[in-house]
Amino acid sequence: MSVGHCERLFMQVLQTTPYEYLINYRIKKSLELLGKEKTIISQIALEVGFNDVSRFIQSFKKRMSITPKHYQKQLFSHQNNIQDIRGEKIMYYQTTYKSPVGTLFLVSDEENLIGLWLEGQKYFQATLKEDPIINDQIEILHRTKEWLNRYFKGEKPNIKELSLKPQGSDFRQEVWKILCEIPYGEVTTYGKIAKVVAQKMHKEKMSGQAVGNAVGHNPISIIIPCHRVVGTNGSLTGYAGGIDKKIALLKHEGVDMTYYFKPKAR
Image (cartoon, rainbow, N blue to C red; front, side, top):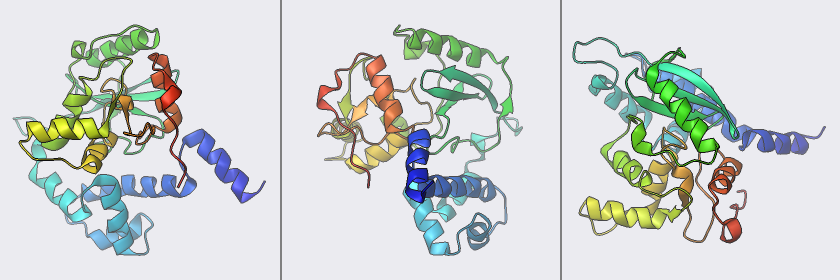
């Protein structure tokens, strides 16, 4: 079997290249190390497999929209993300759900749904500061599974039925709120979202790239419907779960795919 054939098979199964998969894996490992105090960036780069520190920083910033140093600084200056008012660590609980688009990983803080990722998705569990504990008995996770059952049966369950608490910056939160307003079976564009965000933030304009980055980092896939966002020219770009999954979800919702197309591989 040739190298090229192996790469094509890899792409078909995981919707990403072997190189991108490796880099994303290294970045995820670096997030764990950055969460430890007194760790040096250069040591982390080497430990996760980067021989060049500048290349590590560049790769990290490309995927996380922040440098490793600033990520670490924010992490330790916002401990309330993983601690409650008594200073006790908040536990994360996880279960899985077998769906028509693959295995989904559901995570809660016991009261709210804070994450829903597709297997192999970019930025997989990147917003978690601790490893989740497997637990199928959490009520919000049970309600989420029921919501997903109805969704995949062709029903239109309301997002407001679930208590969602995605973790992210104020800007990303604004973008995710707009995503929640996109009706079932319809799509919008990154450009239109950028205009709405600009108005809400009282700015003349907003970068479509910044919006695309926020959409791509949505930690609650399907329920917060980032799959309903397309390029202005009809390109089905920017879905962290994979283009084929995006197409499957849009077709499931009855979207006419005549005017949309897969972006050319780079």
